[in-house]
Length: 131
Ligand code: SF4
Ligand code: SF4
Image (cartoon, rainbow, N blue to C red; front, side, top):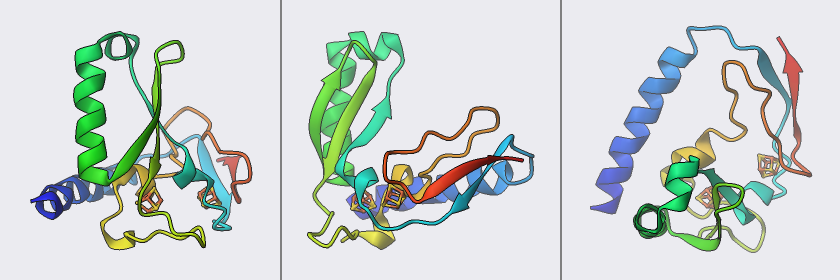
């Protein structure tokens, strides 16, 4: 069941990225992944202020994400509107133990949006360059 849902999510991500690739963005990435594992140790999922205030929403979101992606909740930060997780699939060597079925948040990091400069974690081997 979990694999089936993840398959649909990955298909959605694939199609979205296909269309996103058709339009120019303000920034591009240079560098490469040095496998520091920082993006797996502390996964930040941003919330709107309304989502962040709602205990019902955050409760459901945390349960869903924890079950579907095998993430472990670290923090619900209502002041800065984000959820922070770590991941059961991160191996002691800093590698992904679920690479084929890793979620979109992992596939799309570092996220390159249309207008905003990509936000990179400390130690990340990528850099953002203006296009
Ligand atoms: S699924 Fe893999 S890539 Fe994603 S956070 Fe877990 S270990 Fe990292
Ligand atoms: S933070 Fe950057 S360099 Fe480190 S594992 Fe993630 S993508 Fe790779």
